[in-house]
Amino acid sequence: MRGLILLFLVIIATSTAAQPERVVADRLFYINKPIQVLSASSDTTDNRLYIACHDGNVWIYENGQLNPIPFLNLGAGGMDIIHFGTGSEQGLNGFIFDPDFTENGICYAMYNGVRPDGTGQEVEQRLMAFKRSEDNPDVIDPTQWYELMEFDEGDDPQDGHNGGQLAYGNDGYLYLSCGDGGSTGTGATGGGSNGDNHGEFGNGQNLKTFLGKILRIETHGLAPYTVPEDNPFVGDTSAWDEIWAYGFRNPWRFSIDHETGDLFVGDVGEVDWEEISRIPAGVGGLNMGWRLMEGSHCYEPVEDCDPNNETTLPIFDYHHSNGLCATVGGVVYRGSNLPYLQGYLIVGDFCGFYDIKFWIMSGEGDSWSAQPFEIVVQGGFVPWGENSFGFGEDNKNEVYLCTSIAVYKLSWNPDEGLPQKDGEVHIFPNPAQGQMVLDLGEDDDINEITVWDQSGRVVLQYDQPNLVRTARFDVSNMAPGAYIIRVVYDGNSQVTTQKFTVR
Image (cartoon, rainbow, N blue to C red; front, side):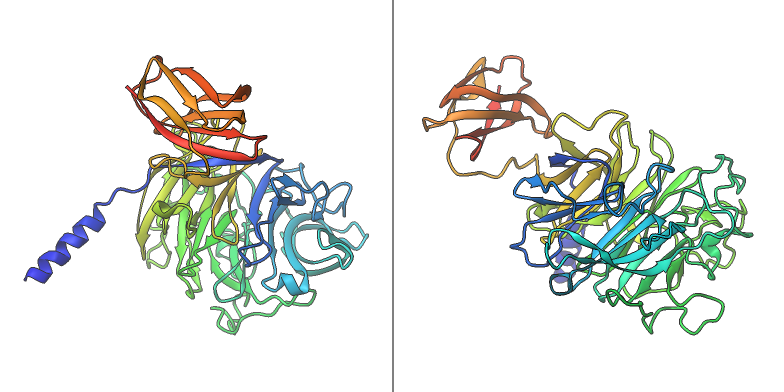
């Protein structure tokens, strides 16, 4: 009995633990429409990042700056084979490195545009393999490519619902998403929106098309792919072998949990609902519902749309209220810099212009809970001008946020303060009231001073104040509470932080 009581107390303590509420993200650089951040190598000493952008460029970020020449350029001035700008969802939609990239130099891209063979032949969307240059490992050889897959939209191609995420699973196979080939509808409820007019229930329910699906294949570089023998529809003449899951409208972004192998898919809704779905590792053949359902709600027909309970319901769906419009999916945090986020799924919305832009989720199996989550950035996101495009991860499993204009790294917990660096800041008096003096303790030029409050918001910032060793502040107008100050000094080569209190 005593053991049962102790177990019960442990369960209660675990179930009532508060979820994290916020994280501070550092803005690394501004860039046009980044969609992915990833590493080319699993070697954690390799700190280079690759930034895939919707306009067809993939850039290398190294030593605090972007290389002047893109690693891959599908647009003007490069291979010039991409369609970008004719539709907001057209462009480079996905990019991934082959697991053996270090040895074979192979990477893969999904894009809208034309074939690279010079014929100018139009394609709606395609999966291509490219190879790194033998002479310059920082660029792709434009003559070394292979077409793996084309997504045929039939006689009525439209600009939207392209999906395009690429990710290797823990099983070594490539997973890729494609939308249903529709476009933005009228907004009418009950199946009258006309967002996907392909067949009675749309491409998502049609197992004889790649559209509206997540596929699973085995890649072989500049050679044809093969289909894993354990794919759910192998040998079924009524379905394509490549299909892993179906019933999607536009799975623009998905991620794979490095620890469990589960897929977490953000499927963009039509009229009212956005959804996050979980596909357990190794479980193929699930039907996610579109166009029978939108999220966990009947769409067409409006009643009794899933009489046999064959649809897999999302673990989270949310309404198009509060300025929300389109999910960009999420990623499970498996890094080491932010232990308080370990195992949580971080989810975002493309719009979210008002109070809520992100959520944090926890759970297991089909039971998950979500609560609003704040990603705090210096100066805030640009109101009505900075959309979230998706998340990325490096080879240390640290998480990045891509917006329409910048890349951010989720960096520190504002409730614990910045990590301490070399050196020491002396603040007196502390707690401060009225005037406060900062003493660096070394006779170095101060290049930048930043002060954050407890929520992670910047309340004071001085760039290149031309101060030596000491600075004086008036804190009489600052609200009582704890603050964190960061000082950059010695020609921007040193950083040190300190907590202080205003009373």
